[in-house]
Amino acid sequence: MNQKLLLLICITICCTLNVFAQKSTFTTIRPDLEKVINDYPNQFALIKGQQNQAEPNIIEYSSKVEMKGAVESKIIGYPANKKINWLWEAKLFVTADINTLKKQYKAYYNDILGKSLFSKGANNSIQPTNAYSAPSEELRLWSNQFHINDATGEFSKLVIDLIAEFQNFEWVVYLRVYDKEKDEEMRPSKDTNDPWRYGSNSNQ
Image 1 (cartoon, rainbow, N blue to C red):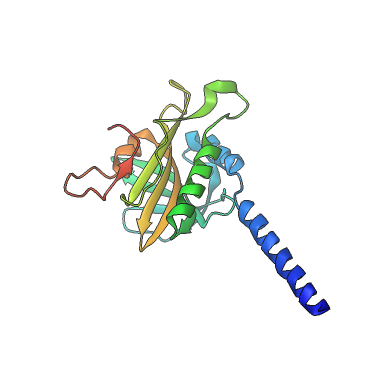
Image 2 (cartoon, helix red, strand yellow; image 1 turned 30 degrees about the vertical axis):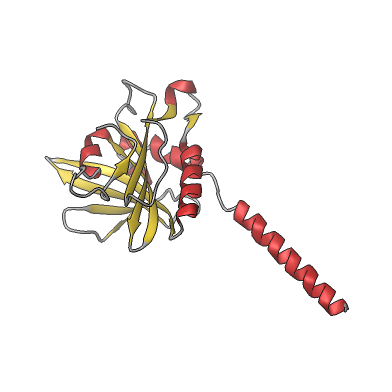
């Protein structure tokens, strides 16, 4: 009888810890994101790590700033017109469950949104480019973008892009920071013959 009671207690404790762990899995990325944004005017030069092998016509470095819980973080350079367009990217998480995707994606969205940067007040807060739009099973690529409330300063062209992409039967969520001049090259064009191609809340 005592053994059964002890087993029941152990099971109860394990279940409780499991529920607690599930509720505590999300960790804020704001401090790390601010480090990335702070180095944006320097084209991420201060946070470049070791150079990696990459595809032809692409330059890739590991990132010294790594998001907590992220699968990987890196800096990618795209040479074009005697200039290199730099992009910082973190693969935040991977899941095959659409409900987990929606919950975690919204949590990251809320974590990125608002709050002033660099202790400079509302003029440097992160704002959404458009109203929030949740990922859905109908589309294979989803994006919510943000910008810095800095119309004429060094962050005026900065884009923060939270992307959910369906790859190999799993959802992969990326966070990218890059220059607006790179925006059109990074974002796939809409194709009326392929309604699964792209979903976004951004106006084009």
